[in-house]
Length: 268
Image 1 (cartoon, rainbow, N blue to C red):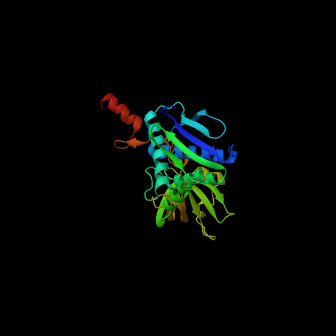
Image 2: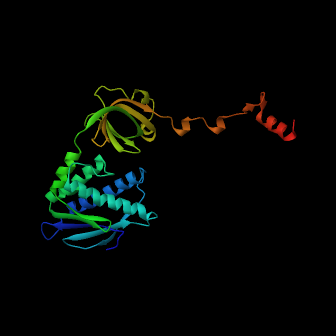
Image 3: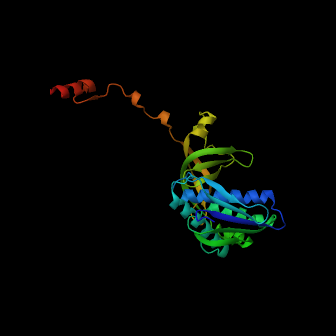
């Protein structure tokens, strides 16, 4: 095993591994790595591209992962360390939320460990950077406890609107640069989009807005959802004054700029 790898070992309850559970573990693992990347690097975009560098077949299956073409080995090491130590902390205690972990990550951990109810008998992660961790259904229970203790507070967030829906109550998702997706709900008769009515639908989804209201926060201070009071559209680049809009600016006692520069050149 190379020291730049994160390894996952999956053991089926029978000789085979259920495909859906296998995929769920891979997707959850990748999601955690990308989210930790965003938090640790303080960049909402994932910086590293993860790849499978080795795999054994049947049960137990061992999947080896590392970042591809990585220009920042220290970041990769920090992500893998935080991943392994965070999972170990969640498995062994519900008292403290692991460093760098968010509400969304705790929910992802629950989804990964829940495949133990669906044909997977054992989930293990190991790496040279941290102690090995063996997930159990206690992981699910501990993560669930960590996600409690929510509170509400007035807040405003800037971002892009996506997934506007009226089928399950009036709601939409706001994609915020730091926290990701925040579910926003509207009262049945709400008119918060009143100032957006004159816009085309594509303008609502491509422009940035500020959404204000009462936000629901997790115990670690992450906004989970919001009851919306107002939505304000921010001006786009095309709406701002452009250089080409400035004609014959005058300076220095009312002289035109060309005349003023010529006078400086000629020493007048």
